[in-house]
Length: 257
DNA sequence: ATGGTAGTAAAACTA
Image (cartoon, rainbow, N blue to C red; front, side, top):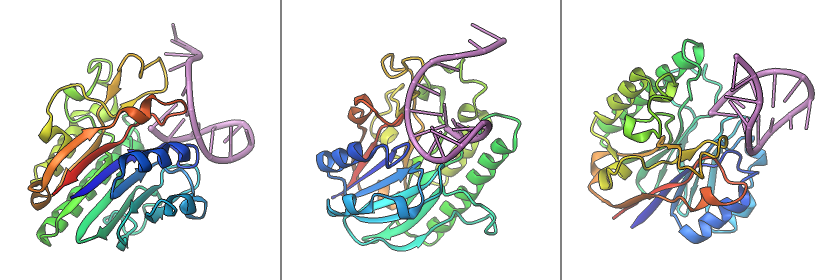
């Protein structure tokens, strides 16, 4: 069995105590982090290695940044999502092989506000991700693409769909781009095992959103077909979100036989 | 109509 978790920590330095608590209590084999918000040299590597994890990071000053933690060695890292001819400066993608499984930590662009180059970048990034998933499928490699997708796949993933109708996370074009990836044959691990609507992974810091369960489901674990056949459990771990000084996202996890 | 919060990092930007 391998347990995989993904978590947008919103600064790994600010969240280090919570991250260490999560590693100790949840004991995941592989952890995919987003928004580490630091350069590689500032990542708290020693504290995490002390708990028995290998560490790979793609950092950036102040913004973005992704990482992979794994009990087994992390091999053959790919540090940018292909398809931008090296012009994509943003640290949003890290893919590597862990024990025969190809795993990617994904921080998909938010895309707000609409009508700007930010939204165009989001949709272009999603098309690059679709191409990458297609290439992994054609190589017949078992893989997991997980992280902060910044897409609510349907209105059932939004606490107030009307209020979010103009948000980049809920646009029909964003949702279509997400479906184009899933429709390659991937499985949304959490939704596959529990399609209960309104199960969220993110709650804004503002307006007492957490206390009122005003959230969004935007963190997803997508499994390749062979990997989906091994899926035995999945869920959203809301415990970290309820702590003081929490990230605005909470971990999502799955187990593969 | 505005500001409501958090993080980074030093005023503004991202989310």
